[in-house]
Image (cartoon, rainbow over all chains, first blue to last red; front, side, top):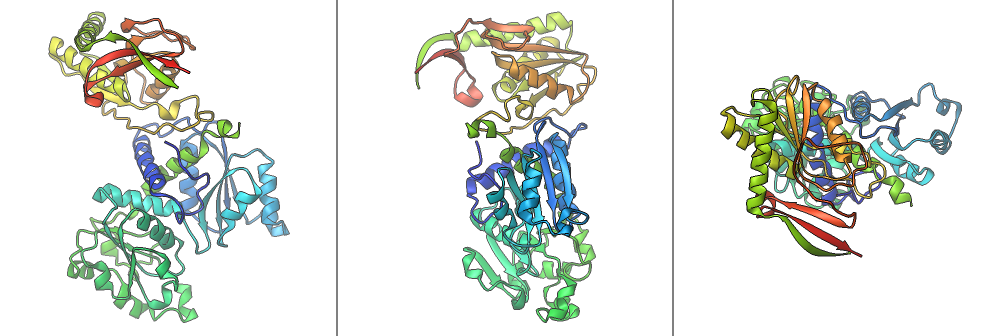
Length: 313
Length: 182
């Protein structure tokens, strides 16, 4: 029972067996997190560097908690106040950090492809915590865990992701992952915010009609609308967006999906992409997603962190 | 690597009698089941734990809480093992604080799993005692660990394997010795 992947760069080329193993392992960590002592000694002696070149609250805290609950030693790096500001290159930064004998690197960067590049500069295990608008694999894995916990299986499950698909690494990772797992995935939003390469995502259906996307959906995921993009012309007015793609209780009822699991990767613009009553309603899994994030990241760290002494022989 | 079935250690009937005897010994030593809880190590230890608890209940008339413990995250070979073992469920829905805990495993061998189990259990609280029950003690200890209740002691060599089978997982009960040949 080992992963075929050595790093977690994205879900694009991760096989179904690996995703299933990560989700199954995360179940065990959900139990650990429900104990009084929420800590196990597994990563004792391993050092994990959280390398964050871009702002993050949720993801960074979630990774840090996951590392600490596995008894790993953690070092946090943020580009503000570092040598990056003095002009140090990414390669030099990582090689200097590696020289301090680290085992794993969790990286977030504003440019797509940085985690992949780092695998070429270091022997440490690389985990992508978000790279540009490319991927955010642990978010999609925790989303899939949350969906699987609610509905039992991902195969054939109708999932609707609504919003700015084009700029969303969360949507991209979910599209790769859910397609691999055989879910019936629909994406919906203004055409200007949909990638042109949609045909690459096998099994993913696009519509700009929210009612079609929602029809009998079991999971509805709203994405954050980045208000600053309004000035770029990609985006109608806030009011028009709200009227056509905003998730409201009436829209859900009309489409026969009042029992759908409501998800959002956060942070939420309340009253724009989703109304407060839906976001805080009985079917909302928004905070469950956050709780599952720690268990999922523990599973990823556990599965990628072990067995290297032997493998190196 | 070829395997060769060598001999039967316990057949179905003998296995039942051995488990019944261990239940008697546990009750004899602890006087009653009042303060007992039983925790079995995944997977077959947990099944044997269930049977021990059931037998103790039959004799004492009190319900004995049963839990399952997975020690994967407490192993000492995480960095060196070729493959990570799958994390299985730990399911202990009662407090072990101040209890007499009967820890159950199918085979006692190097003692490393028992060491991990002691660490894992003490993360759940401070029991009054932990008593260790094993169906088979095959010797060859690498750690200073001993069992309090032993179903059967079987001297073995390192190239032999003790296979415990239980109806719930393997379709029938019994213990066999298998020789691994290179």
